[in-house]
Image (cartoon, rainbow, N blue to C red; front, side, top):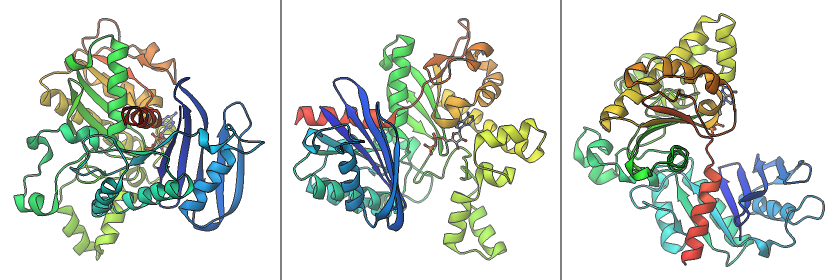
Length: 400
Ligand code: ADP
């Protein structure tokens, strides 16, 4: 069975085609700048050379058409016909309280995703464009939706409610949802395998540290808390997002700087975090490089970022009354040995003992970076959200 995984954004579509039996990626790629004359398709077929094409692609239906065309093209294709795609799985950011698991798309599911547009105005409308584009191009092919929020639907009410008037929750569903759920779920399952222990018996703290960053407390395989909230702005300091702050800053800064709501929202989402403190970049590679060259602002940005991760680890150890393993994943978590080292060096109270050589070597592989004697294991597990989406889609189609 071949499954196409789609991550549709407002002006982009990312895709990956999997052969489920062989557990291989047949091709992956992306279309960017949808809506423009200079849209670009970058296609990476397995065993053939990569290709990029610039052309006018004005909307998502044409973008998906182009992807399907190249998947079966003579020179760059990996399939004989699009009939060889058995199902499509979509990443959907917000599933609200309605979706606790991945589901097959039908009219009710589409209606519900549309109802959730308010909660994720930048993401869910784009995902719907992707679903409709697949319907038009591949009529009758089953589609599944996999939600970033679903894994965190197991949070208890004391973790997901904000201490504000309940009317906000009852009338407007203002609560914490959490994101990156597909990644937290994937690395939790892999961590249990790596440790050779049943997931049901483990207390894990998973740290997805990429451009967006979130931690989750995973108790017995279910999420009991996570750092992102109603939106992906809460929690850890990120590349360009502030993470936690005193909410009173919002009206205060608006008054003092004469900002509109959309300006302050843009400030907190796009011009804060590592970018704002370093004054340099939102990219951790550049921050570390500048810090090592003696840049004080880069060093401060790094320290704040690291400190906040460490505080969440402490909080989640408290939330679960202990921790068996801490998992680092995503761009920074998988690649920044400096960040992992700094975090671990201040967690000796948990009995963590870093193995510097393990921390340095084996990039891109699943590994422990602690010594055998360490009472809490720290793991690096490369995330694979696309594979998780393909797996969920596969299970749903098989069960149907
Ligand atoms: P997203 O949240 O967009 O999926 P990723 O998980 O791909 O992002 O993470 C992207 C971030 O990973 C980059 O902004 C960069 O800071 C960081 N990163 C990638 N490689 C390295 C590296 N070798 N060292 C430190 N940080 C890295």
